[in-house]
Image (cartoon, rainbow, N blue to C red):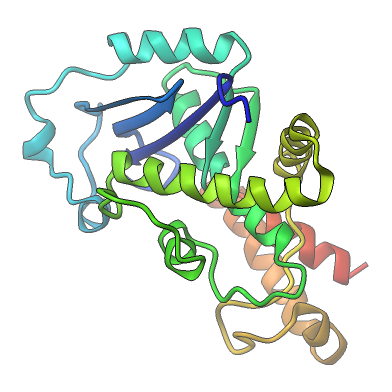
Length: 242
């Protein structure tokens, strides 16, 4: 497989809300890894610190990301048509957009995982869960660290790529299909929260459409009032409520 146009990327941020900004980025391209901490334009939230273990003290003497050599390199890389591979890629693409970096071509391993799980057997789709669910052999990859995460990300991508290529036997078509899947909302098959946790959404649609209407309303409210666009759930719920 030719990975020359693939950029495996992960960011750590000050928070997950609409004001969140980048404080660490790591990426791998052409077998070279790059990683650095940056001083964000707003404080790191405690909730974010508890996940990434990056504190405000750690970045106090760092340079801002915007205008840094790494920022300029990523602008050039993505303006040249590179494909960003990320897990929950919409989040990383939005964080980069806030730093004036536009990403046009995306492969989202979070969406690929759900697409391939046609029987809804995988309980969770977060990166570290999939790392151990698929028994991926990844060394020197601490969780919730941007550099560690891209090492897991690349191995997860390879796992899915091999699975899809076994069927298509055409590497270019696999990359194309991955990008097509990543460009659309994912159809969610099973609840992973709430009173219907672990039940199929299709079964709940037959027994309790009121709950689906309520949940859709909450998701739309989150999108309109908080800027949190859970497009996958909105797409799924609208499908069942037609």
